Length: 321
Figure 1: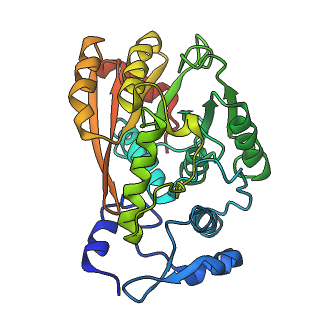
Figure 2 (figure 1 turned 180 degrees about the vertical axis):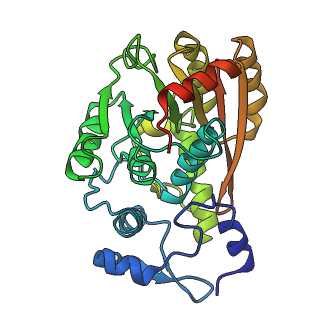
């Protein structure tokens, strides 16, 4: 048995999350036999995966997608960010709950629901989860053409995704919505996992802390256990500057989108984020706490729509059961 603390932390995941319980490594290795090469015994005497090894982490997540999400193709360069699936799934499930508030408490499903993923990355993970769990339609954007090519290939190689995921290259790295959302286009949700480091040295220091927490060992030149290329992890000013830019630019598309949202990894950024949101006249702000393992995070969502506009939006756009 794992430690009581681990069990409690796992239970913080969303009720609809497929990975609320300990990983069934037997089932996962049956789904992806190569995973067996990366299973070790942890300090509690249980079979586990070496979370300090980026290839082991990638194999685990690939097995999760094969077994729980019926995704048979998930290939992308090892240098690119490999996302932890449970945490990414929680973001999608919480956004479904947010939409449910104006849908008689039921998350709307189907491809009339349009979601914009800012920074889709080479792994295409948010569209994978949103399509397989809710049958939503996704637009994935990125400033990196190789990431766009990889995400497109993942979508094309999986029958569930090929007609519901489109990818758009953002050619202006300073813009998040302009050049992506057409003037009359309607988006029900925007989601984003922003790069949260301001410099490479800060990113490396964070990785050193993470590896020490996982293995108890110091590493001067650590390998990122979830991998990641520069634009996936680092931007000028870090997470806070990126989110403030997103907030400012969202005002230009205030009637195109129902809910804008972003992950916020650092609690100390919230005060400034709320101030920025109020300064541009948003109608409603939601903060949704999330937690996986020993990490706490949150989603901040905002809308410019009035209550009547929100009701009209859901009535006109969302399919009714």
